[in-house]
Every structure is written in structure tokens, then in C-alpha cells.
Image (cartoon, rainbow, N blue to C red):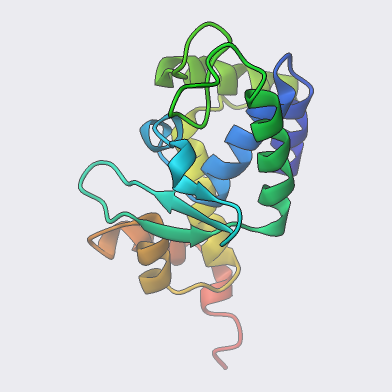
Length: 171
């Protein structure tokens, strides 16, 4: 992920792009959830982000990590000088007040190439990567389900089944 975030930061709009990738991965956001984030969903004082989930998933507040606060502050500073600064959306394009999901699909594909990945990067890979990362840290399926907003824990079991961390130390 650090390699992908680094590649994102080297783009034309590196501050915004790296922030988008970091938040999408760190909070397991779907592309529509990412581009739908609004300024009011971010609270730097309480260090929280409101993840408004799609597809019938459960929305909720997540803590913002230290490594997310600095990029967010940098992006908000840059964003204030943009043409679409009055937009309610957190992430805006240079031409409008809304960053379209198709634009993020294309952007992430290009970032993946810049990072030197041999596989195709698409937005949902960030959500899956978040789930696998949590499982590899030893997080149980119930907590992964809560974090990703899954109503059905079965959706989270895929991440846990492939993680050696879940069975490490059983004996």
C-alpha cells in the first residue's frame, strides 16, 4: 500500500490522489463511498470520519489514524484554493465540484501502473486489501464486519479464512 500511495503522491494532483487512496484503503471504502465523502464527514478535532456505506451496508464513524490526518490537512489546504472549493464534497476534480467514480477508476489504474504493479488496480481492490490487512493483524471476522459495514458476517469470513494470523498460536 505504501508503494501505491507513494505512486499516487507523484501524480499531477498528488496531494489529493494520495489522500484518496489512503482513505479508501484505510477505511475499506467502496468507490461510491469515497467520492461521496463530504466535508462534514471529516472531523479533525475528534479525529473521526463518517463512513456513509452503500449497498445496504452499515454506516458509522471511524477513527482517523495519525498517517491520515496530515494528508487530509494538506488536501484541505490545497482544496480551499480550488475552483470548486464551495462544493460540499471532500474530493473535487479540477473541472467540477464532484470527483466521479469513473474518474477514480481511471486514476487508480494509472497509479497502479506508475507503482510498477503487474496486475490491474481497481477501486474495490483497496476495500479487499483493507479486509485482508485487518485479518492478517489478527482481527476477528465480527470486528472486520463492523469495520467494513457488512450486515452479514459471511462477507467478512473470506478475509479471515485466508489469514494465518487467525490460527497462529492455537497450540
